[in-house]
Image 1 (cartoon, rainbow, N blue to C red):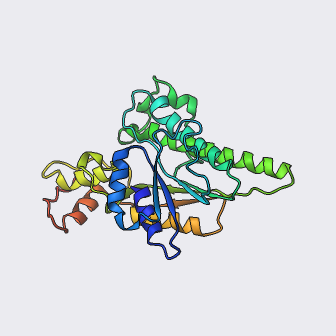
Image 2 (cartoon, helix red, strand yellow):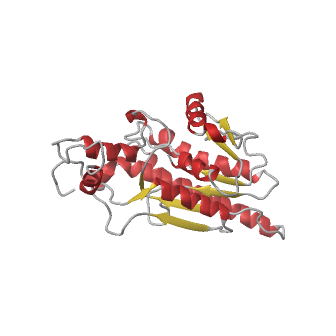
Image 3 (spheres, rainbow, N blue to C red):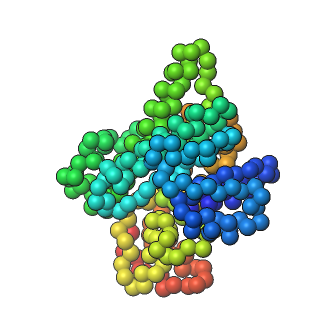
Length: 282
């Protein structure tokens, strides 16, 4: 969702940059070609099935000056936390950075993960099959392991950055590249690709459920902070443009947050009009 919106922002950018984007499957490539049919002269689409594999990108990032690493799995109630979440998130990050570091040209990677500093969970703790989720409030339990994968992946990115920086300084030289982290909350907003309901991102499925639940109660509030996908994409482009490195940007909405009742009410004012569920204090 972010990658597609970011691609659109770049394709409409005044500087007319050339873009190379990656997809996991041929079907995704077909959808992108359809969505950006008028810009295929500046858009190259490459299939990379598994980003967690060492050297997965091969020659994909040759001659690239800026990299935005956005992909990471969101698996609800994973059967194997380490294999389904931790390894893909962490190795996907370090594989991207390692491949990029081999390039001779200077480059500026972006990274979309968080949180880091205030999440105390460790790799060894979260990978255990017997992890006790009951010590967290019930609405949060399903994404404890997901947030752990995000935190650990970002930590791996910073460790890589600091290690490369130290090595460069030891050789009496400066690091030829910079890294910026963009941490976002739940994301909502209009889609560019034509997707079936089951293919929606998790957060957009939450929005869908608020406006189609009829007289049923809304979900319990699990996380109150949201951000518009168009704003997320815009920040990515701005970070790519500016000489910013070693920074973290946190994207969120108003401080008091948003409830599912807010979302249901807002969406109920636009066609097609769905019955707005009654307030449940969510």
